[in-house]
Amino acid sequence: MPVTGTRLAVLASGGGSILESILAAGIEPGVVVADRVCRALTVAGAAAVPAVLVERTTFGPQFDRSAYTRRLIDVLAGRGVDTVAMAGFMTVLAAPMFAAFPDRVINTHPSLLPAFPGAHAVADALAAGVDRTGCTIHLATVEVDHGPVLAQEAVGVEPDDTVESLHERIKAVERRLYPSVIKELCGWT
Ligand code: GRF
Image (cartoon, rainbow, N blue to C red):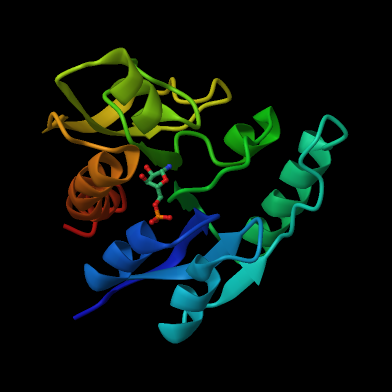
């Protein structure tokens, strides 16, 4: 029996494999939003989940983060969303996002936070020569990758790991852990 999440939104920017794991866990988000054309939109479409592109066209210093955040909030509010799960969403959102959905924006990050925040967490862990890294699911706040931790799991670094091989093993954990945290947060367990 699918868990109908008409008030859950999933935000994505990329391959959408974390989104796939959320869907495979029987969670039906009310909407998937992407900030760029990406496979995640196709994944949503194939699952008959409404998919909306709130396109970000500027990536340089001219990017108006506040205006983009307002556009996104309007789309989410217009669909009655009350919980937001970021799943590989690569746009940093401005403060109004976290005021609009207090303690209801979550994120999965491919490191054991507070170690290796930022967009290159797997490469940074590899470059640092750590023997284990992992993933963190946390409440998202205006300070990127710093919110309260909801779940963490370690992944060992192998001597011959590349960024791709290590990230794939971390994602395998995220695909198991993130859906279960979402279900718990939404009271669907
Ligand atoms: C995940 O590792 C997530 O933690 C990070 O981006 C990746 C998303 O993977 N923020 P995918 O696009 O869902 O395959």
